[in-house]
Length: 209
Image 1 (cartoon, rainbow, N blue to C red):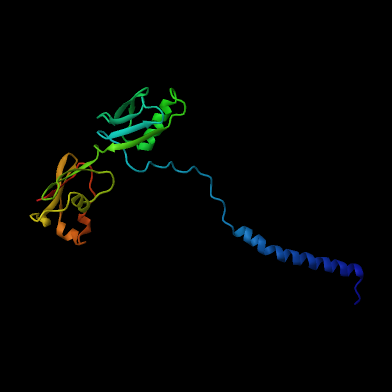
Image 2 (cartoon, rainbow, N blue to C red; image 1 turned 90 degrees about the vertical axis):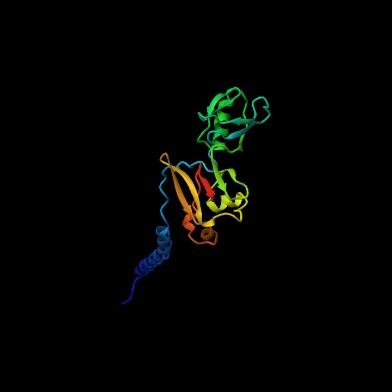
């Protein structure tokens, strides 16, 4: 059967369209395989990192080019407040140094053009742990970050030759009552019973008999 030129042309166009459709399939498949964009939900508010200021801490406040406002040493009062020139009383307990900087800068904008405030903790008084008994340097130590029993004893210079290493304990205030947490220092020091090497809380006292 002899085909007309028009029929041949139609067949050729049909084959060309099929070829183009086949070539488009990988791109379409790739496009559909791409992950959908993440929903634009509100991100969680970041929590303050680092040290949290408390009562009895000593702060150093520097306001750039404002020596009359800067405070080389200001103690956080039992009510959690400090006094700053021009600003007056400001509650800082429970805040990080960076949060205090932002708070003071916002208040000082009423009186100072673009205040630049720097706050540092000069002395830690709100978070203290104690070690007593047969250690080289018994006394109080600031609890600036996480610290366990071994670390505190190391800060105190280690135990003396007279220490009862198996009878160490931690005195801790729980619900208004003093409780003892036993620590076998000899075993913990050798890497055994790691659960006894507890992280200390403010106010804890490690006793080395």
